[in-house]
Image 1 (cartoon, chains in turn cyan, green):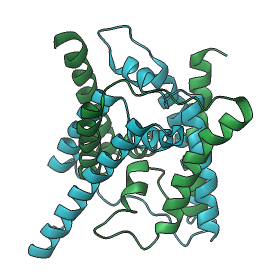
Image 2 (cartoon, helix red, strand yellow; image 1 turned 180 degrees about the vertical axis):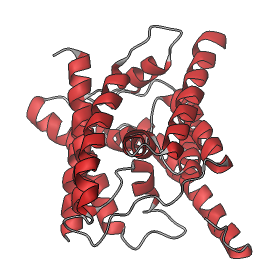
Image 3 (cartoon, one colour; image 1 turned 120 degrees about the vertical axis):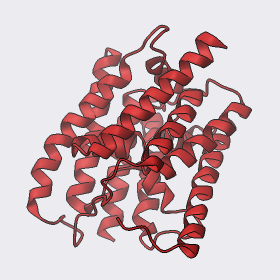
Length: 147
Length: 138
């Protein structure tokens, strides 16, 4: 229950950050990606603010050994820079450039009640489901890949 | 306030959210991963906190609208056909690559994860190239 409360609060703070920084506006995001046009560096300030705070914050939190309200830190185990990582990132980048939506701002923009945002989010969820489904098919027919 | 000041304040809030989620629950604030765990074919057992995070995310602009009169949400810049294609690409790409702008971009880069740094360089380059082709070539 406490983990649910922490998630609600941090999701809310995350959402406020996206709105205040204008990452909730796809035109601003595409303005950053358009380096040959009228370049808008806004996203750079968001990234810088986010990474500096997280870099320092993680260094204070992670050495404590365990989180306050959960038994352990759940950190990604994968370390390999492999084909799925790079091809996935490239595919994501193409979609991000086309529409100016990455997953956070897209989900948040559902609050606007616009049908077009719902179309994007439903398509995004469908894309995620396809990959998750393919993964279960593969793990059902092949032995698990050593990490 | 100047847009860059607001952008920096927004970024600090996003970072604070990521740090608090790690401090309290030990989780990475990666939106694609959090949402992915809610989906079939096998939703994660710990779906409750994931759903709560998504709820918090959506409540933020609604609260801003109540307090200030504006939800600060911009309109889509492209039509429905492009939104469908882009949505599918974003969904498949983030699931395949294990993260998006938040998970790899904010959390992974802050952990100095070589995997995340490689992902960020790749998706930034792909996105810039896509916008270049869409706006200046086609």
